[in-house]
Length: 205
Image (cartoon, rainbow, N blue to C red; front, side, top):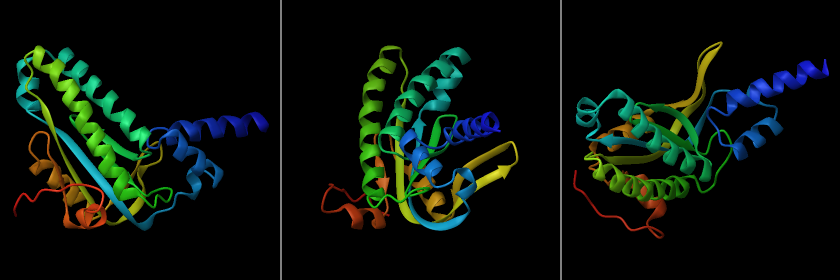
């Protein structure tokens, strides 16, 4: 029985590792594990990012080079997700979505998202210098929004993701789509929360 319990806990830890950084997993496991992560409405901050020029790049090089470049990009971004204790909903090709303040409370969730985005932009600038030497013209746009969403597991037994559903995710994704290379677009909600600590520039409607 002890062996079975240990094996079950290891499997649960492995599943949670797909979404949460180690410091978050420890808190989730201490509260009873994945079984306690019920769907609920919460205030979250969502960050979307995707690459600019990726389609043209992927059409001009071999698939192996595309995968190697994505590997570089995802590895750098993943380190920042862990550093700022974000919850990774998914990597989807050249884009990804991270959110904060769930499954554990983070009183500074808006600031965490902003600092993560700035750190990611710096990392991407370094990656771009290497990509430019290989003739690749790639950059990234980032969008951040804060609002209420329904949080919890999505999917079916054996294949599920932990994510958030609501307008907050749609708006963050659209901001990311609208952002130019090197831009981090935020909503007025985010700006109001951070205006004393960060600089913002208006970009029009």
